[in-house]
Image 1 (tube, one colour):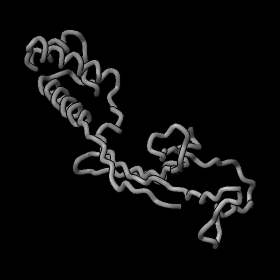
Image 2 (spheres, rainbow, N blue to C red):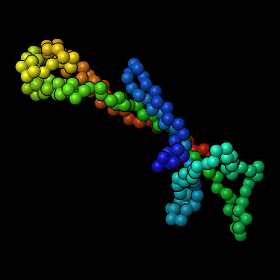
Image 3 (cartoon, rainbow, N blue to C red):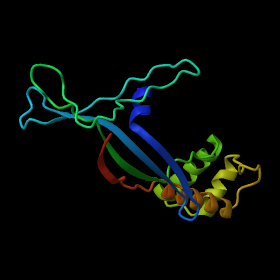
Image 4 (cartoon, rainbow, N blue to C red):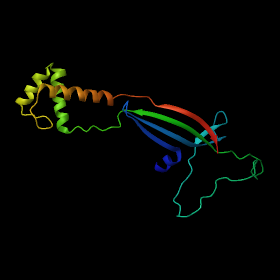
Length: 183
């Protein structure tokens, strides 16, 4: 699988936009394709992907130039003359925009506090003063070890909800620059 990816992926470019807080991935593919008449093809032309084989080379070994010739029209020497079919490659760029390549730095304790606060606020309809009183009565402290206030509860609730909203945005991939190149 790794060898196949080396053959079909030309470049991967990753950028981060600080203003929109998005990761921009641009993947450029160069997929080798063979065009030819295959048995069973309805219209006489069938496209198949044929990745080149790669193996380990010895250090300092020269790489042979593939299909190099100064002759432009080459025909096979068999009893019927079929022209040699040139190699082609399908090139395309795929742009992916993602807001969720970031991993939350919340500790399990912070996540537990957020779950308690959001459950009481959203499901039970409590205000943040009632929630902070409940947390104090049940011996919970803030992540920094302080006694809870209603502003702590409100801050944890709003900041985590903004984070969830920002990191759950979805974007559709864009495919551009599709072309077939003759090798």
